[in-house]
Image (tube, rainbow, N blue to C red; front, side, top):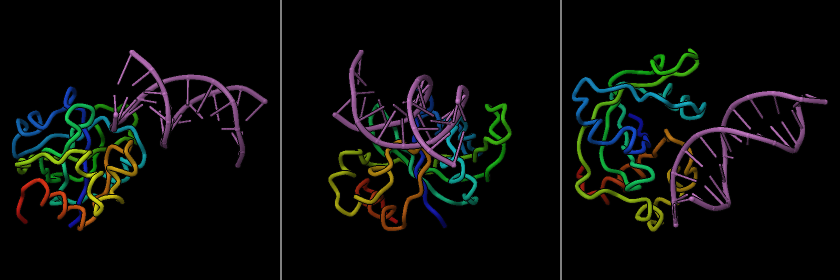
Length: 139
DNA sequence: GCCAACGTTGGC
DNA sequence: GCCAACGTTGGC
């Protein structure tokens, strides 16, 4: 299974919105960046991701799961834009902030730190385990 | 609210 | 196919 990180501004789509979408999940729509889209195309059902609040909070606040592979983004006219569907799985007991991630040497290679503008990013197994540990989650 | 970083667009 | 101009993202 692969791991990912999804960024959203809480003003437009927050963790609470994501949880309100329930078990059937919701489209991760609105991505207009090829790298981010390609990452979504590579996802499989069951892959997990961090849900990150950008701008306000700047922290990983929860865990999501891919419930549907990439398909046309209903908010885009251009068929080139695709998105996956995600459902909320669990809260981070202690949100892991960007400052926390930057301060942790084990995470210095993480895309969140080094490619700050990419909105859908891959996460390595080690990074996944480390951020979960920092957030207070067990395996 | 500013600005740096970076992706995209369009003229040549 | 290069590169300048422009727009957007996101941290501060």
